[in-house]
Amino acid sequence: MKINKLELLDFRCFTNYEIELSKRFTLLIGDNGCGKTAILDALVIAIADLLYEISAISAYEKRRLSINDMRYVEQVLGQEIIKNTAKNTFIVIDSIFLNTPIHWINGRGTKKFYCLSKHDLDDAQEIDELISPLYDYVHTIKHLEIETNDPHTLFPVVAYYGTGRLWQQLKAKDKKTKGPGTRIDGYQHCLNPATNQNNFFNWFKRQELIAIQKHERRHTLEAVRESIVDMIPNAQRIWWDLERDELMIQYFDQGNQNSLPFSMLSDGYRNMIGMVSDIAYRMATLNPQLEVDVIKQTEGIVLIDEIDLHLHPKWQREVVGRLLNTFPKVQFVASSHSPFIIQSLYGREDCLLWDLEKAQPLAIESKSIEDIAENQQGVEIPQQSQRFLDMEKVAIEYYETLQGIRIASDEEKQRLKQKLDDLLEPYSDNPAFQAFLKMERQAAEGNTNAS
Image 1 (cartoon, rainbow, N blue to C red):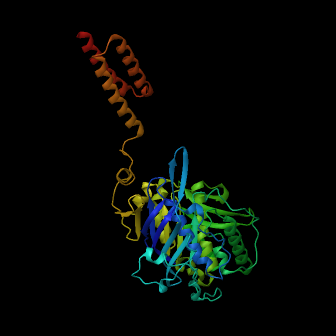
Image 2: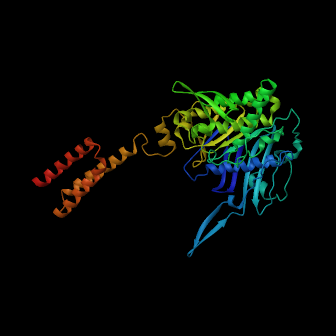
Image 3: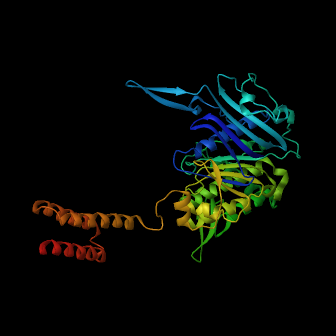
């Protein structure tokens, strides 16, 4: 599954917005409120439609466009605020689903909810021309005739990880083993921004027990295990400890080998392990017939809001490359505010950096963190600390006050001198800075007295 293009019409903060996605990795950047999460949510709604339209995939909790997704503007009439909401909202995607080109339109409003296959469209028609005459909900995805038990059918992995993925957990259940399930269990809660680590724990524990009982190597288990180890810096081994009844991680830290249960790891480790293990577990559930190749051969799309969440800057510079190497056939769409994430995309032709405010891709150049922060993220003089900038502002104000002393009355001079003392007080721990400004002050006061 791949999404090539997304178009939004009157969806949340967007009037008419279009974005073409990279086949491998698209990073969304922009200021708070520019619509990064809205883009991801629009993709979630569109993907949910595709899954829901396949009758065999019924385990997913349907997510539809709501009235809250419709763009609105506020107008003040007299003393009242009036909310004017758009009559219609549309999400349009061009995608490849199970090797079939799909043009999918999801709408809400005065027109009925509908969707169309690209095969039924005239490519010359514009979106506005397509929308106006449509009133019927057309089922066209059903012609794919998907059979969940057919080993030749490779289901794409689909997952969405929101900003609350570490602490916003779905209701936990006991970590108990269970009997065989269906392949489509891999879509359960897949587009819920909350996480369900318990599903992975249950699956991993069950696979470990089967391997022990049958004295055999479980190919999908080893593929999942290897993907997690490859993704985590300095990780060596991951296993289910039957004595502790908990997932254990063995890793190197400052030259020392450590083994810790998952629950005792840092937020950064738990966040990344939880996300990667969830992707890998879903792949193994959807396509177990691929066995040892399941991670490398499963396609799909993964959405990640704030990919740098809880990650140390050193790890931020590695996370994109590790994701793309670990899951070579997955398309990722992520958002971030981190200049380290942006910098890590340099030299990768499979990555796209998209500025939502400029509505265009940005060149990924070999720039310093300071250049990225200033030129692409709008941070003023990022190479200087905020304390330095505050000191510079104080110095300017100090000099301006000194100039005022020269022409001030005696009463005004006393007020200005007190202001100078107040300006220097926050920097009592910097004697060089204080001494420099006091010398200027003495010179100015000396000139004043002499005159």
